Image (cartoon, rainbow, N blue to C red; front, side):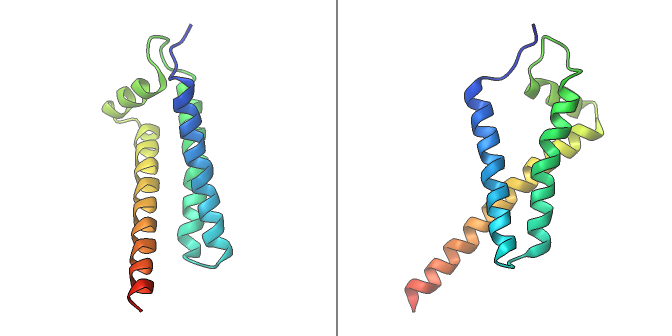
Length: 110
């Protein structure tokens, strides 16, 4: 039987992706950063699919994360794409929070 990550991890992972897609759709509907929002939606949908499809062939002794790290060390294109995609989504959230924070400071100063 293959190893897998705990259920709480998967709940947090898919909740993060769902909230990310929801935030990008919200920005898209408000016509804010339209291209970036479409890119975020694309990455949030394709990265888990690529990861899932490539985790199917993982050795049974490795969980999904260890398999990703192992493949990344070997230079697998899918692993580079997955890691870059998650990094991109994290940076998108950080910039979004910084923009909101800056906007709130400007509102309070007026």
